[in-house]
Length: 169
Image (cartoon, rainbow, N blue to C red; front, side, top):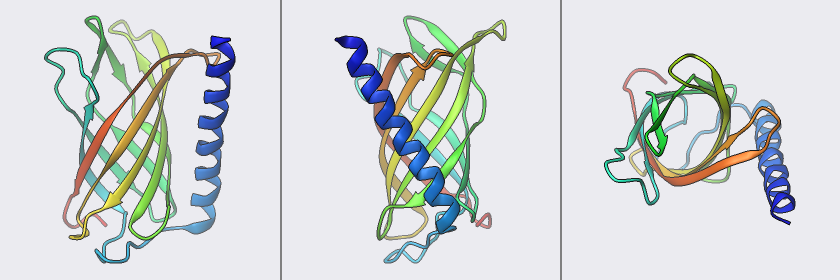
């Protein structure tokens, strides 16, 4: 029965990812009402895992949002669990408006061990709200680590926040 739940969760996750990608391609850039800012350009972010292992610091990321809904995200090697550190390549995905000042992001990366051997895919979903200042946002993230055949081996979540890099929109 556990496998059935994972499979259903994976289908829902993939449906959200596919829907986000389709809508991002149609909708283009979204401008946030209220803050007056747009979710385009480069943003410096910080992901803080829920219930992190001892000594687990926030993970710093760079997010780049294209006006066409394209998204790239990159960060440092990540301690995943039990002393295992993975090198995660740049993530590629999409973003779209989810209503006034709210956005949905999804991106996929690949994780490698120190020897450069593929370990797993990393699928990340973020829901965020643009700050009233138009140059910051915060929200929640969920990351699924998946084997090459799509089996979920780890799910973690937490909070995320970012600030815009001036002059990059």
